[in-house]
Length: 118
Image 1: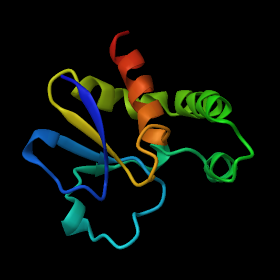
Image 2: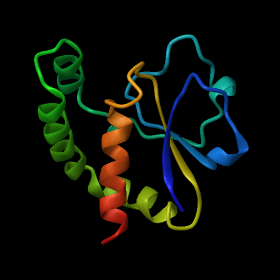
Image 3: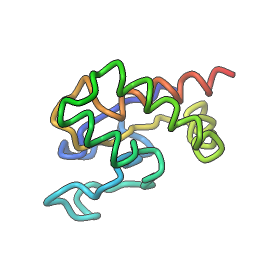
């Protein structure tokens, strides 16, 4: 099954399947009932330093991606069950960034697809 990404501020939909929040910080202005998550994996989010460095412009997108992939590898054992789950059901990774292309969920999706295929 595919893994999709979606801003957490978009309403939940049945086709989302298993909804996973992948940010370290709870999204502003939303309650748990509003976002209807199945799991919150804080460890799947970039470190505070990495997130702040990217958003401040100290790191390019390519540098952020490379560093974040290294961090994700440190949590491989934690993320493997999510990759395995995506073989059987739809997974939606929820993120709060306004940038819908360059965000941690898009990198995490790429990482999960890679370990899923192994």
